[in-house]
Length: 87
Picture (tube, rainbow, N blue to C red):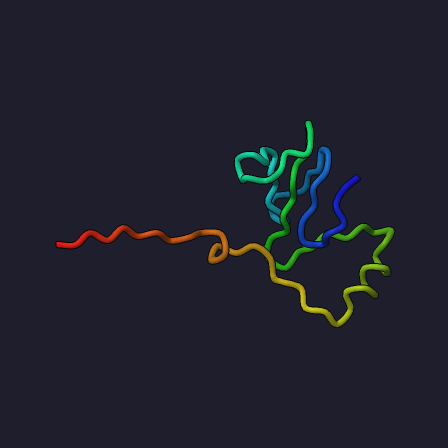
């Protein structure tokens, strides 16, 4: 059983090519809930999303003419931090 989101998935033994999604096998490292042994997360990159071939038309009808976020980008995941010291 996996989540129903089209931009991320979590479930047991999920795997995908790293070109399409970020694979998180250690949820604790990313401060995500640990949902059990062998549970991992997939987060879609760029403009990719997750649908199952058997439900393609269901997803197509549901998301037709909707805006879907473009995915994970460097600008959204890296937080610049600076330490200022007075002279």
